[in-house]
Amino acid sequence: MNKFELILCALLALTSCLKHTHAEFTAADCRELGFIKTQLMCSNCDKLDDFGLETLKPHCKECCTQDQQTAAQRTYAKAILEVCTCKFRAYPQIQAFVQSGRPAKFPNLQIKYVRGLDPIVKLLDARGKVLETLSITKWNTDTVEEFFETHLSKEGAGGGGGKNSYSVVEDADGEEEDYLRTNRI
Image (cartoon, rainbow, N blue to C red; front, side, top):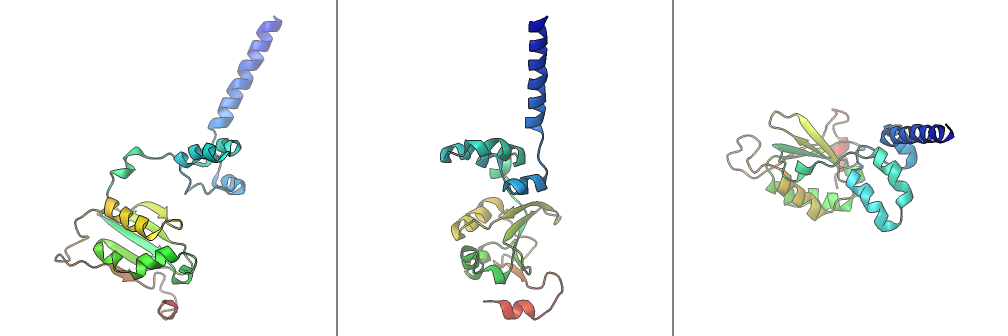
């Protein structure tokens, strides 16, 4: 009977541990651990071993979002790059992309200046519904361009007559009209 009780206790402890490891942390829990749940991909957790950070891996796995295998093949009808000009000093690579001629290569790209926002890309379907939102704070100029070349559909976003241009929205919230105009670099 002693062996049976020991095995039973071991099984109960094991199932309890398995339930705990599959429980996901909330966004607040992850933030306290130093992870941003909406931006953490599970493939990045696997790379922690390369840097000797194995102890972080279990928590990382509970805070991550599963990578989608088809993401590399997915294209979107339109993209909106949202950024604040006041953050250009913190993100010079994004500034270089926005102020270069590169956005003109993508007729279905819209650059939207939103006060106080770190740079993000919103990917939309043909109806204008946001399908994904990505933080691009760590991207360089070439990565941004390559991403749009890969993931934006080649057809224009609505009959521009073949004209290669992109749109810029300066006042996203209808706040002070002159703020962004004077804030532009």
